[in-house]
Image 1 (tube, rainbow, N blue to C red):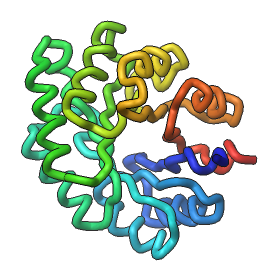
Image 2: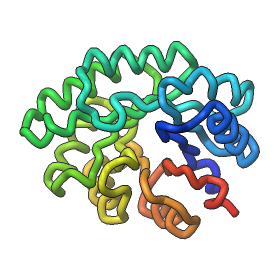
Image 3: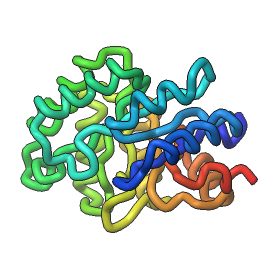
Image 4: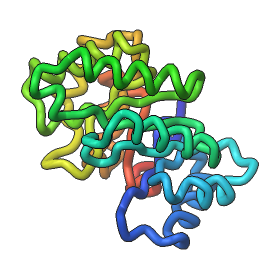
Length: 212
């Protein structure tokens, strides 16, 4: 596979304009990236921009804190799908995880996955806020809840993806779930290293730079 096949070309900035999203989609089409990833308010714009191209459309929910109610996350996910999203990237309730409320975290992921059905669900565990034990627990919960991916980061926390975190996550999910590395992936060498470690998708706002 080409490097472009791994890239979720991303713009989640609060200041992103319609023109910015159009540019994001144009770049994704030009470089044959796997997907674009946008905030919910930009889903309809992005869907129109990618038109009939093979580029997929991912939308984030519960972003970037993960602290919304489960009902709000479900509504947001379905609204994104109704407007054309092919994939959903959700942030877990980090506070619940750190409180030891593992059943609640698992159930939230499970009900969202059941609600969206065949739509791909990526679970953002926001590794920068977690101990290694909590990262392992989060990956196990996502696996139990039948998510499709675990994802390292929102890009809005205190840190992004790291090699060590990907190795840890791979050790828990194996081949049952895929892994998305996101946050701070800005050059080709770093991206290729993540792929060697078993990553199936890379979330980055630097897609064109990665493939030059």
